[in-house]
Length: 108
Length: 386
Image (cartoon, each protein chain N blue to C red):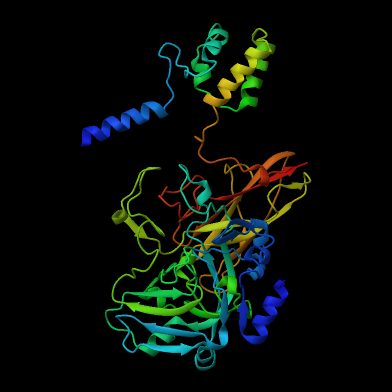
């Protein structure tokens, strides 16, 4: 009985958890090969997978790399797909000691 | 449509308060509060609206496990006292309590056990209270002790449990919504009241009128509303929401997110030391160079607050504040201090109270527990200095 429960748990877990590519460490979701192609030329993909941010965060990161780090222009469609991939799979997670004050309690 | 004034007027004049279906909704009586749920009605108070010395009905948070009774008749209201450890069970008319027993008045701090729940991580279920489920009003009534003594307390008395007239969400009239209480020692304290007045008026229906228990300094769920029956128990009271994970925390601390078996949970008694900045309102703008007068309240459950410290640099340095003595035991205390900002920019003002036993408020979240009780992490407000 316990073995059956374990097998069911593993099956459910493998469905729920994102599949990660062994070589790059990237989550295998729509757009991951584009990220591999455009990002790994200059830096370790851990610089991607260790970060968490919303779409704006990732877009600013790309702009900074384009401005200062010689990242090439990605083209509108490719950039949109990369941002969608990053914002979805590497979205903010609460890992801090305590959240910032919510916007409603901050100065306008 | 029945207005708020009409409802209150009827209550004062006729001894009858109605909150019938189709009449004023509880949310309309609390226009300035943040409504967390309409059914059951739960609403909390923004910190800056708790700036009064004693909380008025308008700004008092509301916590319900069930539905507010439809209609209350103070003229015919009675309180029964019984239970295994009651020597002579009897009933008292409300009018008899008011005329035949000594009245006592105290300012008593009532804080929901789950105040601050919204900050726990991993998240925990329940109303996601932020900081506003706390109040300190002036309560008047008779001592619970005097009523228990009038009935006779058996030697083996352990706990006093309450029953109220709130209605179960399911509509089942036989289902008890909540029936908690306090150990006999707490029941016998001077300040534990069977109250019929709040801030000099009959207790509003929304706050448990015409009669409620008030056990200051403990989770407010110990202070039963719409009180009609008390039981002196020979064991820890086992009414609704006394067991399971209700108002109980791990007896031994657990890592965040770890499941805890019911038998490893212990009932919350005194609330922990805590403080709240009630002025200025978070998000305020302030001119650089001018002193900003910061003030608020501090409380410590059964205990007295010894000092309140304030920081404007994320806790790197702290300054002391002027702290008033409580007007009576279990009342919150006022603190206030001027703070200076040396440059323009975004600042946070933090406050941290310390009780007589040297216990203080944590900067991060205190012990995670399955229902998110007892978050006494320091309060923070934002100030933009320009």
